Amino acid sequence: MVISRQHYRMNERGVTYLMLMFVIVLIGITTTAAAKQWKVIVQRELEADLLAKGIEIQNALAFYSATIKAGRVMPGEVYPQTLVDLTRLPKPFLRKVYLDPMGRGEWEYLRAPTGGIMGVRSKSLAKPFRQHDFPLAVRHFEGRATYHDWVFQHPSPSSAPIAPIVPPGIAPSPVAPSTPGSSITPGGSAPVAQPTQEQPPMNP
Image 1 (cartoon, rainbow, N blue to C red):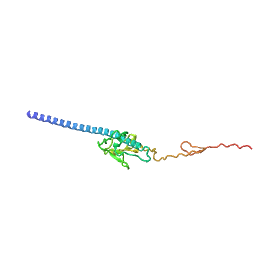
Image 2 (tube, rainbow, N blue to C red; image 1 turned 90 degrees about the horizontal axis):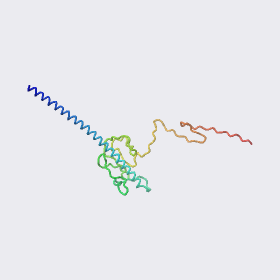
Image 3 (cartoon, rainbow, N blue to C red; image 1 turned 120 degrees about the horizontal axis):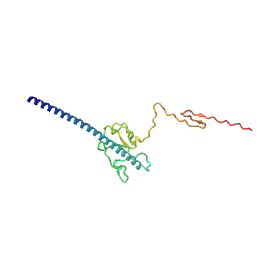
Image 4 (cartoon, helix red, strand yellow; image 1 turned 90 degrees about the vertical axis):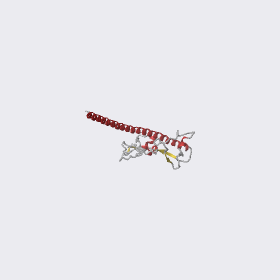
């Protein structure tokens, strides 16, 4: 009888131990999933902040260049030597000198041939969540592999005109110039000569 009770208690302790281990594993899995989800949320917020601050710096570089070179004879863009130059009074082009949101540090600068700053980029090599539907100012970011490939610069490649898309194998047909006495039929056919009215002979 005593042996039987001891055996029952040992089994009961074993079941309790297994249940406790199961709960610990379940808590660990739940905590890991929550941590991953939180990391995704944080990265998405930093990514949106990177886009907002980068576009603001890009616009500030454009306004700075347009203002400084106004009235000058020499062609070409004019760039600041530091981002602090964009915040100077009496006409600041940037509210403050932002840091790289992804790394919380300095940007990597894209230098112009004259030595000024013509653009900034993040030092982060992480993969962006956003791959499509970018703002017009940075629409050339589509499909870029890392945040380091997002270069906010002036002039921006996104400001270049978009060439019309022509389906493969179809060449745009040239428009023939119109000539007097001719018309163009629908579908781009060749000009068709219009019949001329024959004037009656004049009597002497």
